[in-house]
Image (cartoon, rainbow, N blue to C red; front, side, top):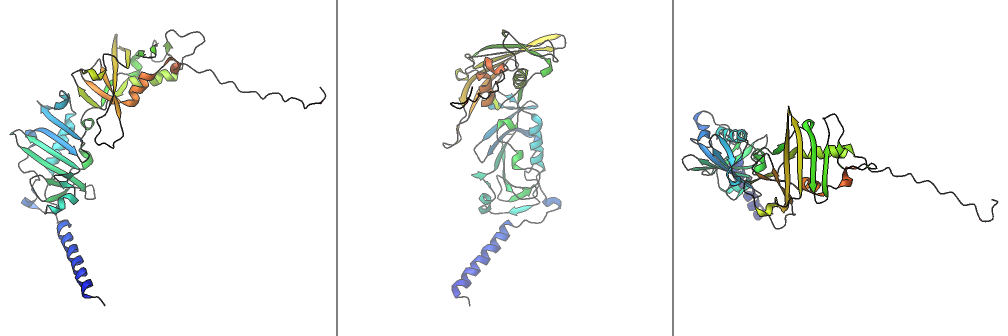
Length: 344
């Protein structure tokens, strides 16, 4: 038999369940004029800037320059503009026909609060105004909780998912920073602290040769091919800008790669300069240290960041890394000595 206290507790629990259902139970779809855009009077052609922030503190700033989009904090490094226009079109299509909650108390739980969100998208308009949208937790079925910054109501949308909205520069630029056709490359010169290593071939079907190879040395073709793969297709972590800084170490590079390529009847030379190895800015005191190298290409006015492995590989190459190693002799069993006193 329940005591009066148990009855009171049961009543409180039932009330909490009712409140939760009222606050979080998905409302039915709204038709007609009530299915309004999340952002009223929003026109993508009037957007001139975007700032995207994620819950880890990453932030990327995008700006419209003429008809194109750029990274204004990186000397207007070009952005893949179609990625921005796709995002804006999705924002414009978000509707308010799937109401989930109407109280500020739900914002943190659904991660659409001003200080607790998965993504915060700040949209700068041509008239100087700013529209803010918060993307929160998944609502299941490829849907995301979403809230306009000037509203309390939280909705579900299938137009936009959090991972569609990256908050790093690499999400918005073409990360393939430098490329040359491998078959067109007929010469590679690598200079680093260990020396200068020169390789060439008359055509793509021929084997590589190495300058100053002694008669008792043999070039390992696969190792030169690995070098070719690395230096003819270089991806960046992100741009740094056009202004050279002393800390970039370009004046005293860790490695320099020169490529000679045949393009039609013309021969062209390309140069990659690998500068200093620098530490990534940590986002928290407990974060493990990460490093990158600064890279400059003869084909671009921009300095960029490339991954540590790429820089370590080119800066650390030595002559022996390109040579075939002599086969390891097979050990022969030693002759068993006859026991003492045995007949010889």
